Image (cartoon, rainbow, N blue to C red; front, side, top):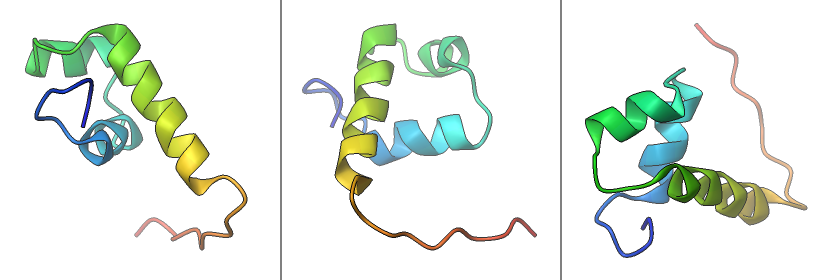
Length: 59
């Protein structure tokens, strides 16, 4: 969860992966701050560090 908010890190990372910009996410969810989004990306990067994950081809 983002800084005690009810927004899962996976949701934030998914929005970025879908092409949303940070300002668009902040518009859709007014409680988080830009630093929260950045920290969620750092957390996700650390979670997958040293792991091999298969890349899926876009359809």
